[in-house]
Length: 173
Image (cartoon, rainbow, N blue to C red; front, side, top):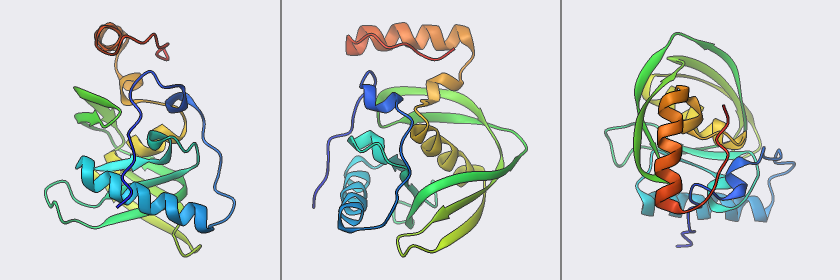
């Protein structure tokens, strides 16, 4: 097992727009394994490569909210092609421990991505999976879920996080 430390709010890597994965080589395969091990240990719903310090467009997501043994799948260079409907639900983040807020997301999305085998795939996702995919894809663009909150709530959370983590961070407005 090669579980990695998860970067916490305030780390600059979490605010970077990530580079595409150019080829699936041993380095990327090792990163995928490290992410799988980290996600299992952290008991999260998903994980983005920048959360463990690798600013590349790679995410892992669990397929079910309720099943601890749900499949975890890998999406390389994911891109949302289509979105519709609205869904409000509570979200948290492994990089912002202890904070949960209601976030509005698209209810249904279509995502194109490359799988571990290099094949391009398309997935239609709704509800839980849609929310997790959007959350993790946001990480690849340097966006945290707190950026999706209203201005008043976002500022309140920002102050709370600054006090808790002792780091200054400019939250996008």
